[in-house]
Each structure stands twice: as C-alpha cells, then as structure tokens.
Length: 323
Ligand code: IPM
Ligand code: MN
Image (cartoon, rainbow, N blue to C red; front, side, top):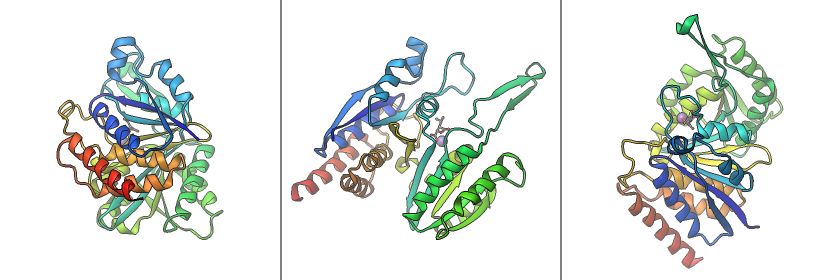
C-alpha cells in the first residue's frame, strides 16, 4: 500500500516549486515515502551526466516520479542530454496527458511522447550548410497513443479530435491519421473528427469550448499544450502526466526552469501541485487528488511561492479537520 515517490526538483524554479508540491503531499497523511534524486544542467557540469545512473536507479525502485524542470542549452553541448527526454525514453512513457481547464474550457491534450520530431535522429550535411531531423512515426506508437486518448475520451465528453498535418506530411502524418481513424473506429460511441494542426491552433483560440480530447504527435502536442495553457490561466496552472505500461509514471509542470525568476521565491507552485494531484490520482488516491486539485484551483498565486503553498496547505488542513 505504501508508495515510493522519487522527487527530482532539477534546476531553476524546479527547485522551488517541487518542494512546495512535496509539502502539500505530506499534509495529506497518506502512506507515501519520498526519495530525492538529482538531474539537470548543474549536475551535468559537476559530474558529466545530466541524468546520473543513481537517479535512474532511484526511479526504477519507485511507484511514481515528481519532476520539476531542467535548463537545457539552446546549442549543442557535447555529452549533455535532456533529463526529461531521457526519462521518457528510459521508461517508455509514451503518453503525455496535458489537461487545460477554466473559463468554460475543459480540454485534455494527449501527446505522443516517444517519437516524431523528437526522434533524436539529427545530422548535418554539406559541411554544416544543411541540417536534417528525421520525423519518425510508427504504427505501434500511433496506435497506443490513440488507444490511450480514446480511453480518456470515453470518461469525459466523448469528443475526440485527431490533429495532424497530413496535407503536407503525407507519409508521417498520413500514417498517424490512418492508424488514428482505425483505432478510433473501435470506440463507436465517440464523436471523432480531425483538424490540421494550423487550423487546430486557430480554433483553440477562437472557440476552445468545442474541444474535449485532442490526440496528436509529439511536437504538435508540445506546442498546442502551451497554447491551451495560455488560454486557461497560463503555465502557472498547467500540469502533466507522462505514462507508460507497468513503469513508474512521471508527473511534471508543463513550465520550464524559468531562470529569469529563479531563486527569488516568486514562482507559482500551483502547476507543480496540480501535477502532484495527477500523481495521487494515478496511484489510486482519487479523493485526495480531487481535494488537492479543488483547493489549488481556488487559491490565487499571491506572488510568493511560500505564501501560495501555505494557503493551499491551510485549506487542505481545514478540510481534513472536518472529514
Ligand atoms: C515539455 C518541455 C520539453 C519538451 C522540453 C523541456 C524537452 O517543453 O515538457 O513540454 O519539449 O517535451
Ligand atoms: Mn513544452
């Protein structure tokens, strides 16, 4: 029954918002054990590995991972690999669930998390004058992400939108689209439609209430999930889950390490706390998850990480006092 959570704060504001989320989890009186692990650019500079073997080993022995953010350089640094991409790959966390709700909007973006333009297959030709990234789309990965999206859709408003760019990317998006419709046909009670990714961006801004679940490939999901976050309170409230099969799932705020505001104690902890709520739900603590979510959404960010966190903890303590 006791669940072990590996906590990886990372760099920048990750080191501020993840301890806040852990503090919230600790007030709930649940059988949770926390173990701390390191990852990020500072760790890379010290030891040459942004995701050290000890961190992976800790994750291996845990039920879930709570991850903050790490700073990744904009240019190639030999030996540096993004820890979050490494963790997704290592545990084959193929489904990235990114809810965005508020102001009459309730959207879930289901982002494929293992391939597409994140294949890592990059090279230069012509002595550096041409750069090539291979966009890899497979039937297997497309089918499992669309199954996941359909499962999620049937628990919600039963409307699924398949987002692609098959008018241009005829092979890769063509394959994704074909498999998506094949899989969705196994769920006849869902209303399934499709949109090109550019039109999806426009309709998300014009009429977000029309969307329920969106399923899409890796980079499109990355971009649209920031857009959806921008429609519903910004990145300060955007949480996410990275889920695989019989492996520890990883929960992280959608935002990055925000070096511009790091170290000042002003970061909004709510996206990390809402990610912790997704973690609770995944581990089977549905009631606690709902309480954390409800009280976090009801608490404004005052501008101080610690004040916002304490306000959420106080609301939870009051609630548990009466239960
Ligand atoms: C996200 C982030 C990551 C991504 C980066 C940090 C590698 O933007 O989780 O959305 O692109 O997937
Ligand atoms: Mn992103």
